[in-house]
Length: 79
Image (cartoon, rainbow, N blue to C red; front, top):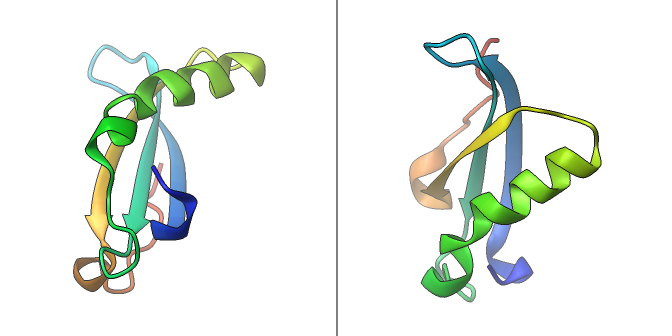
């Protein structure tokens, strides 16, 4: 994803329904800039997994993309 289109990233640790560790990653982008590149955003999970493994985490990332105009004052979710 082009860096210029990303406005904010919020990462929140949690657990899934099987009690496995997850990280919810909310990526807020600005489509008025360069927009969201589909080819690059499709592989975001792979990059997130690599970063988490490098940090020593076993959590699985769950990315979601929200356009800036729809994000409002979005805050990190409660764990």
